[in-house]
Image 1 (cartoon, one colour):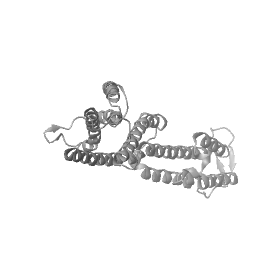
Image 2 (cartoon, rainbow, N blue to C red; image 1 turned 45 degrees about the horizontal axis):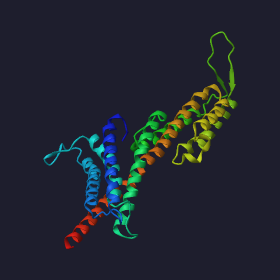
Image 3 (cartoon, rainbow, N blue to C red; image 1 turned 30 degrees about the horizontal axis):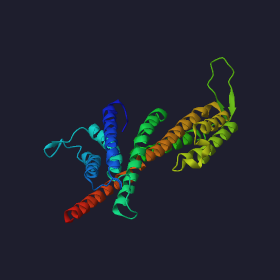
Image 4 (tube, rainbow, N blue to C red; image 1 turned 180 degrees about the vertical axis):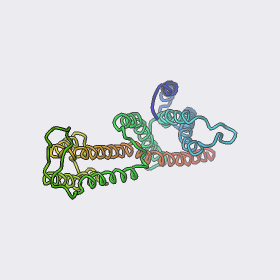
Length: 309
């Protein structure tokens, strides 16, 4: 989610609620000689509000699963943008509110409260990290990867790139029957420049060797194994060197190979950024559901204890 002007009302409201919660926490803290307690009336209020914010944040997952539906029962499902804003800002606000609830204590080591708070901390930090990544990676991909493609199509596109490179080199390096001399096209009335067939054959061999040793490997599954093509600067120098040793007939082929290598490099960079952009979800999402489940168990246990008492 991109934090833009549309998020301003949510940010302002969240900051105001945080300031109010912090202001109310000060007398709550000073009026409890032994420290704030989650079982007190103010503590229960903080806990209830924080739990409500957590629940709203988790419901985003349900909203995504039901995004094709117009309503959830008698209630409107709401706009996806609104749900996302609520997820981010109320989810972020829930962490300090829950800290107010427990008096900034995580509970005894090994207790359910201690486990819940550390789990909540991991969920909170991973969510903030994911939000930060979403502010920079998509923008960089748009600016620096003009050939960006759908991630799920990478395997198919790479196969096409490899096929194109192979065809280019095979067509360019075929040995013709009359390759004793190759003639360049020149205007009528001028001397005809010739290129000895042996020199052209040598150049074709060099081109094929470059393709088989470097280009073919780079277009494979491990582009990092060919450092001379791994960056724009290194690749530009490599191709310039190859281009300088080629006759005019093969220079265009070298340029086409360079373009295909550039496409492969952009796909490799896109895959790296894609994993950065999505890997944090494998931590954030499952731990969020585990957190809610443990919080429900904790609340039920505490309620039963209160009733019994």
